[in-house]
Image 1 (cartoon, rainbow, N blue to C red):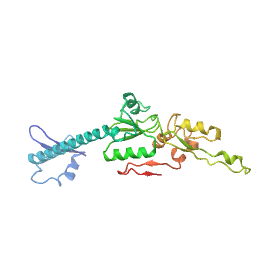
Image 2: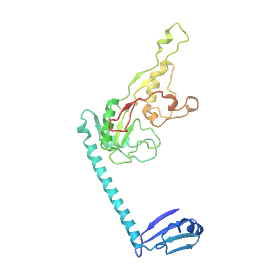
Image 3: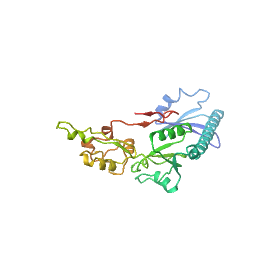
Image 4: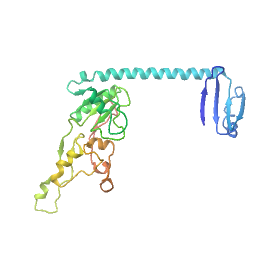
Length: 273
């Protein structure tokens, strides 16, 4: 049922369409006050109930107009506040690396999909989890939209900055450390049953190709293959990546055992595992 309030130039009326004439009496006759229910008629299989209570419709129209203006005013104030806050970020965090290069902004606003680029307002290249936490805390306090960025290889426009004053948090430039890989020392022991611990600890900006290059000599491999060698582990976690090897080895859900994440749930932006 489509309930529509229509404001005409000659006389304001309230028109309600229902599927059939039979439903009109059941659905609307009990709801209309006797003084306002002037007529219930049928026309071409569709029923409509009209009321000529001009003041009632005008009040509703004025109320909706007032709410719309208030919402627009609030949105404009929010956008202005966000713009001021994101403009001040380089001065607020002089030790962090920011970029507003137009070419870099365009690249950070588009993946490998057919969608046009929706560039962010600013890019920050974080070097550690603690830097990410500081940025997230500031963005939460000033209601600034955030998009983590890896290699930009997604096909579903995940990195498109659809909201104004969006900050792109780039993890692929500096957070590329592979902290640990499977320990092969167990293979040198006399116990032939001992096997290495098949775990690798990496930063979110490490690419799949980079990890597999390091693992090549160990006999292990990271099996999730979304079709892009430069896809980062962090981005693959964010999109729950899968690919041609998923049937045998599973998706990211089955291959990731632990994540250190910064949550944008409150002003503290806690780091959780």
